[in-house]
Picture 1 (spheres, rainbow, N blue to C red):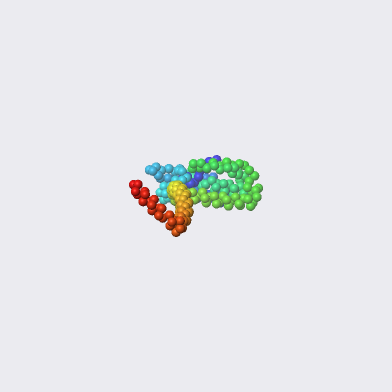
Picture 2 (picture 1 turned 90 degrees about the vertical axis):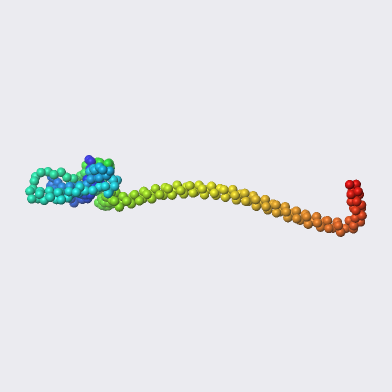
Length: 268
């Protein structure tokens, strides 16, 4: 069966139906909507007004601020008053029960648990503005473990709250802010990646510079060692020269060196 989802149609501002309201109709043996149900539908019937167009069926994620009830509460109340004063047997159509997928599943579970139906939910599939329910004729939830039933009821009640939050203006605004934050995080992530690439490039250059510096430092150490060795050789050479100059043989050969020098000058 196909069931309208109150979050996507003119039942938008109406509350989901409770099992109590269904049991009440069962005990009263109703065969048509009550005036209270007609008033609830027509007094809270809503429409989506967006981009110059209006519709009584709209996407679930529509902006909540574009959905508004029809301004006819006085007329709906007057119709109820007239019916009380002049009762009529005319049938008036209305959505007697209002559901979301989980609230419908909870209703069937409760009715089955109370042995008011043998139907059980096989599966529920959401669609645009409605959901498809596959039912089976089972043994009834009353035949199942009582604790398991109450655990399932808690699960469904919490899911009903989650489903209601989908169309909440506060939740939608929070979702919008989260999406904006995600977009900003993506931008920050891209910027971080860019800076990381730049950092890696600078780090590689620094590593290369450190390698060059190490090479230069090694060369400087080698040069310093060579300089020390040269200084030591120079000191040794100076000592040797002083010893030669101070030797007796150097003094004795002084006349010969003078004659040799004079001879070279004479030849020039």
